Amino acid sequence: MHIVLYKPDIPQNAAAIIRLSACLNLKLHLIEPCGFNLNDNRFRRVVMDYMGLCEIIRHNDFNSFLEKYKKSRIVLMTTKARKLYHKFKFKKNDMLLFGRESAGVPNELHQILKNKIKIPMNKKTRSLNVAISVAIIAAEALRQNNLLK
Image (tube, rainbow, N blue to C red; front, side, top):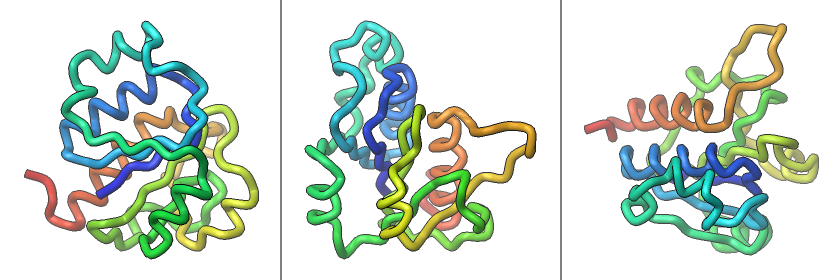
């Protein structure tokens, strides 16, 4: 199972997702540019020694990521989706794509990606923290594929 972060811009969230990925044995893809340096103190404080326990694959941009994984199923997490995550059938090699904390993903990505899901939320709220969203979605995807150990 793969977690894909599109141009992450909050170092603490990216670090928490790296720790989560290490603990759940998920591959993590970072689509550049990141909005911070991986040597940022805020990042290093949260990631601690988990950086070496997680397989991190960096991509220069979305097009190079898409070219490399064009045969993979990419599932976009977005508040704009209609389908709810718990009604979606995950596959064990899915690429679970999460947008920027500040802006999500551009409209072009919404247009080219057919698999889009969301987490149901209180209508008075805008969005969940991306690290929390990754944890919710990853747990369900792993559960469905009997990959929790």
